[in-house]
Length: 259
Image (cartoon, rainbow, N blue to C red; front, side, top):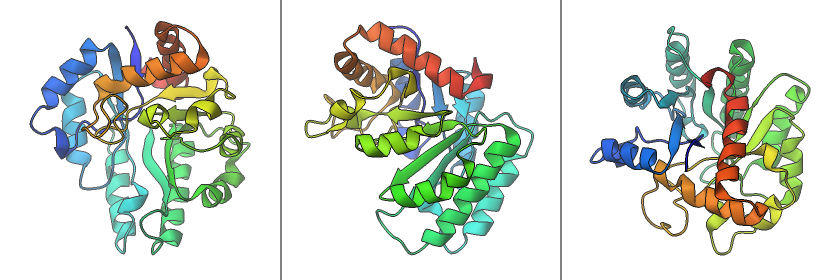
């Protein structure tokens, strides 16, 4: 397998402190040629940039994750923006969005942070990597003013039904990021994807989270993106190599300057 792209991985996180270099080797051996790495918040920028400086196959993105929006969110967002505008090369704004699963205390603040980062993406002509958990309607409300804009990106970790997919795909320059969820036994995602064109799909792991079958319950890593490609091969009834080719082309359409 050659040329797989993991569009969403956090190999810079502490879960990989003991074997980060080995995880990269395993990814290369699995055929992963590029790994896009969305930031989490102001506490992770140093680790992210250190890793991407060291490994040319790792591409950094910069943003503030919605679960990191708290009482000091404006200060934290300002720190992230300072890094974004430092003159370094970034390949997207992410990971951003809305998460109302754990706590709704800062819902309004999440929306403000999200809208600010949408504007960064438009200003800098960078793709947006969007996290949405238990907030589909709220996300659509925030994004509706940008429906006809040049905004592009990925709706990360998609696991919804066909109605939600159709809502998201109204944004013509966006892809759905598909990860280990599609391999879970009780997931309805395979049925949903059978009604979605492959041209709107990219692969991701979200490592260290959401490890696919047969690794479910373990720490996830970029090498496991092959299991997701294999599952899509069964859904779309084509060889895994073709899934890799199509999804990698899709990914590079999003990350226009990472060819």
